[in-house]
Image 1 (tube, rainbow, N blue to C red):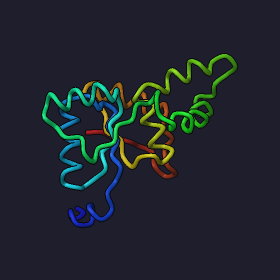
Image 2: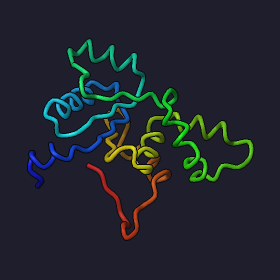
Image 3: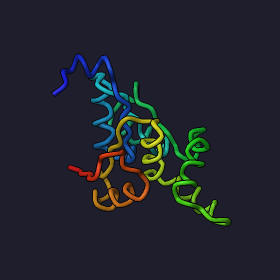
Image 4: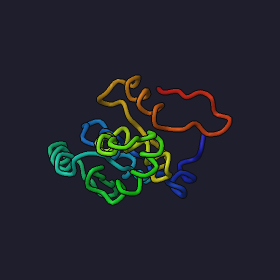
Length: 148
């Protein structure tokens, strides 16, 4: 198991697709406070801030991304369109899909904009995994995936 010193010297970007969830906010706060990672929350900035205030959680060191309002959306859209093999007339549907946090997060992971993706706090892990498997590509020599 890596030492906490090693983790602090090489913090990883940890993306939470359910940034508004109270448990996610608490986990992100711990990660930022202990400096063991760089938490990224997906969701409505307004709602995340409101929930954080209600829970007395400081958002210092925590990044918030609204998929439909970030410049990253335009960077992730072309590879997403290619991945989904979008036919003429389906681009708007694909754009709508990419605004969904699970798809956006999967593309962030695949394109190297985050090092890890955590999901399943509000949704069932099986439904999130199903969507992830439809979006992510397996690395060479990797044939299985798991969750806990």
